[in-house]
Length: 591
Image 1 (tube, rainbow, N blue to C red):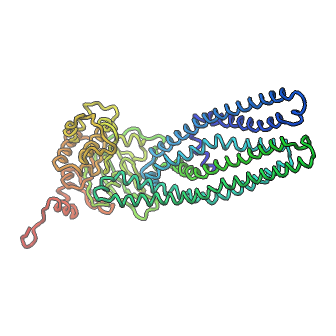
Image 2 (image 1 turned 90 degrees about the horizontal axis):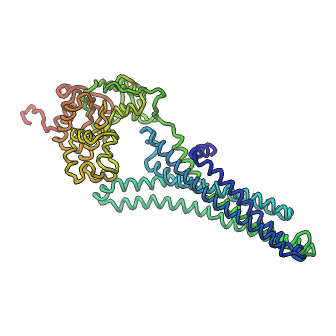
Image 3 (image 1 turned 90 degrees about the vertical axis):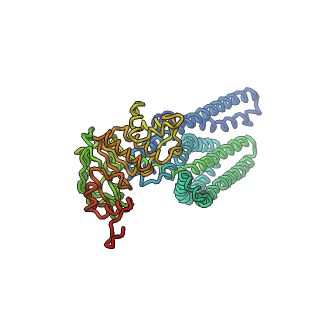
C-alpha cells in the first residue's frame, strides 16, 4: 500500500503547493468550528447573565463567534477551491503519466494488459483516485483534527463524561474495519468485470458492421447485458455492505447522546443548583462536541467508503506505472542506420518466456540493401512475427537481428524505427484530413512530396476524385474510405518517411491485381535503394522479387527466386499452381 501511494504521489508535481495549502485551511476551519461551542457556552453562561452587564457580555462573545464563523467559512471556501484544483490537476497528470507509459510499451508489454483494461484504468480508475485524493486533502485532514480538538474541548468541560467518546469511537472503528475487510474482495472482482464490460462495448462498436451483417444485435445485447449484470450484482452486494455504515454511525451517535444527556442531567440534579460544578450550558456544549466527534466519524466513514473503492483502482494504476519496459533504448544507442541490409542470425523467438514452443526457430537469413524480398507461407506460419523483429517491436529469445550491419538492440529505438517503415496487416488511419494522416510519416513534408508518394502508392487518382482532395476528412478508423484505399494511404504514409527498409505486411490484399502490379513497378523504379520486404498471399505479388522466402511452422523451408523455387520447393509450386489454376498433366494425359 505504501509503495502504491508513493508511486501515485509522483503525479502531483506542480500541485504540491496547493495540496499542502488545502489541509492548512482545513486545520483553521476545524479549529474555528471547535471553538464556537465553547464560546457559545461562555456567552449563555447563567452566572454571568444573572449579573449586571449581560448585554456587553453577549456583544463581546457574539463578536468572537461572528469572527470565528467568518474565519471558518472563508477557510472552508478556500480549501474547497484549492482542493478541487489540486485533485483535478493530479488526475490530469496521472492520466498523462499513464498514457505516456503506454506509449513507451513494447508489443509484449501491451499484450500483458488488454486494451479494454487500459481504457478502464485511464478513465474510471483515475476518476476514483481523483475523488479519493480530494477527500483526503479536505475531509481526511479535517476529520482527525476536528476530532482531536473536540475531544480536548470536551475534556476541558467535563473529563468524566468525555470518556464516553473515547469508549465509543474505538468500537465504531472496529465495525468500520470489519466492513472494509468484507467489501474489498467485491471491488477487486468489480474492476475486472469492468474490463470485460468495456471489452464488450469496444468489440461491438469496432465491429458494428460485422454485427449488423450477421444480424447478431440480439446476441451482442445479451452479451453486454450479462457483463453489465455481473458488475451490477457485485456492486449491489458491495453497496449493501457499505450501507451498514450509516445505521451503525447513527446508533453510536444516539447511544452517546443518550448517555451524555442522562449522566449530565444526573450530575446537574445532584449538584442541586444551575450554577454548580456542571451546568446546563456546559451540558449543551458537551452534547454539541459529542455531535461533532461522531459527525467526524460519519465523515470519516464517507472517506472510508471512497478510499475502499479507490484502493483497487490505485493498485491497477500503479500496476501500469510500475510495469518495466520490455524493450528500451541503450544509453549510448547507435544514431545512424547506414543502409537497408537485414540479417537474421540463429534466431529463435517466442512471445512469452512461459510459452512452450518457439514461434520462430532456426532463422538464418541475409537480405542485401536495396533487395526486394517476398515472404510466403500459410496462416500461422509466423510471417508477421518474423518482420516484427526487424524494427524491434519484439526482441528475439535467442540469436540476433542486424540492420545496416548493427544489432538492432544497439540502436536508439527512435532512430531504428524511423528507418524501418512498417505497413502492418491491420491498417489504421486516424481522425483528420488525408494530409494530416500522411504527415505521420514526415510532419514537415511538402504538398509535392505528399503527392509523389501517393502516386507511388497508386492513391493519388482516387484522392483527386474526392471533392476536397487531399483535405478530405478521414473519419475515425478510416470508415469513409474502402479497404483498398486505406491500404494505399498507409503505404504512402510509410513511403513519406523515406525509410531504408520498407515492410509491407500483406498490405495490398484489398487492392486488385492490376493496382498491386502498378505499386510494385513504382517501387522498383522510384525507390530502388530501399530494401523492400513484402508479405503476401498472392504469388504474383512477389514472383519478381530478388528473393522469396517460404515459411512453415515458424521455420524457413525454402529460399530463392521464383524460378528456383518452382523447381526445388513443392509447397511453393503447389501455392503457385493453385493460384494460377495450372496443374501438371497426369500420366493419362488429362489436365
